[in-house]
Amino acid sequence: MRVVIAEDSVLLRSGVQSLLADVGIETAAADNGDADLPVLVVSQYAEGSYAVDLIAEGTSGVGYLLKERVADVAEFLKAVRRVAGGGSAIDPDVVAQMLSRSRDPLDSLTARETEVLSLMAQGLSNAAIAKALAGTRTAASARY
Image (cartoon, rainbow, N blue to C red; front, side, top):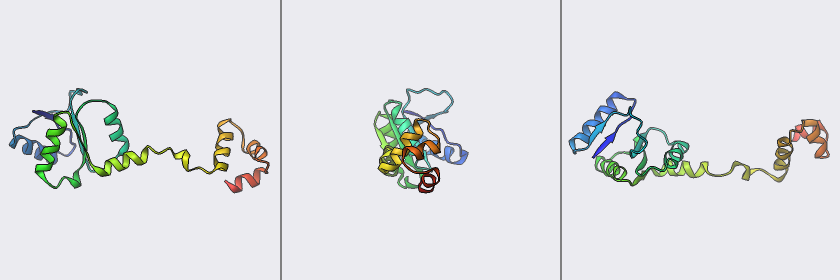
C-alpha cells in the first residue's frame, strides 16, 4: 500500500511517515498531482466546503479527519487503510459542516425580504424599490 502525505508541518509530516512506515505503509511526495489517488485530509479545521469539493471529485477513497480527534493510532491506521482501499472516513464535525453549508440561505428570508431581493435582482434603485413597495425611499431604507 502506498499513500501520499501532504502536510505543511515538517515535524508532523515526518511523524506520520514514520508511523505509517512502521506498519508497512509506503509514503510518497505530494508533488505529482495524480487525481486518481485516494485522498485523506487530516486537518486542524473542519471546512465543509473543502470536504464537499473533495467528495465531488468522484475519486474512490476519500477522507477528512480532524487532527484533534485522531487520538487513537489504531483507529487512524484503520481510516488510512479504508481510504486507501477505496472507502471513506469523514469526521462527524466535518459532516455537520457539510450539511450546514448545503442549506439554501434564501430559505431563511421573510416574504418581504424576498420581495425586496427580487426587486434588487431586477436592477431597481432604492427609490424604485420603495415605490414598488408602496413606501417612500426613506421608509424603505429604514425598514431594511
